[in-house]
Length: 333
Ligand code: ADP
Ligand code: NA
Image (tube, rainbow, N blue to C red; front, side, top):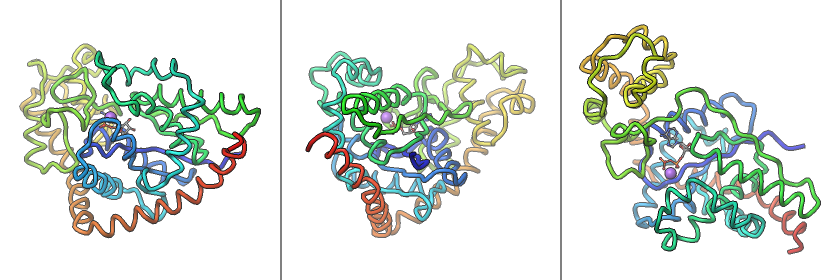
């Protein structure tokens, strides 16, 4: 009944990180190259402004994120690549979903609790309603599949709840119940300063993350300074169970080199950090340097990036418009 279609987005709220690359961009490219789904990828700038963004930074970061998508291998001729705010259907459908979703559902979201914290009275209303906008992002295209990281699973569950409640309340079978695309192992990259926190573009410490714009020396320095325990690497991966920082570096090595963690341990088990960290920096630079170089090349022509995003938005509007029209009809608008 529904066209196989993938939707996913990244917030242009900072420069993209190695976590975004391994957990999102790399998988977006794999889904595109598999050719099984129509792929729609988005810079979700409307989500970014749920917390304060400097306007000039936001504009620049949106182009940088677009350049990162393309440098990583998203091909705007095969995938639809655009900027969320250029397609009004997202915000329009989000309003309708605000009226479908319940306050209690939103209040239970762990990301809301984490981000709003104890000062929730002072958080934006948009931050609270964020999952209804995410549901609109996905359902405006009748997307059947969403590649989600661990951090977004609960929000996708809420998208499914909104679709089901809408279908039930209006007695229709209109919105698909979107399926998660389960990620492979080791796609949750942790902070280099704290093994219990995910690597994030919004972490205040730049040393906590590898940015896709970092040069080889910076990458080597960040891995050299990455927090670890003093013990050398054990013989097997299982022995890293209670050593989150050490395990994270092994996971990153495996993900970047396309090898299994057992394979990495077979080669590096027993190595001290003075040996392993430079080896890790080498594989990171090998993967990231071509991406960084291509981003720089693309960013030299911002007009061309804007043109590509404009085309993508036009194609996205074409898919979303009839779905929004039909939604209005169903609701009686
Ligand atoms: P960030 O936390 O860096 O602001 P976003 O919330 O914009 O990232 O997430 C964009 C995409 O990148 C999502 O698919 C998310 O699952 C993925 N992602 C973000 N951080 C990581 C990470 N540390 N490890 C793996 N995937 C991540
Ligand atoms: Na985030």
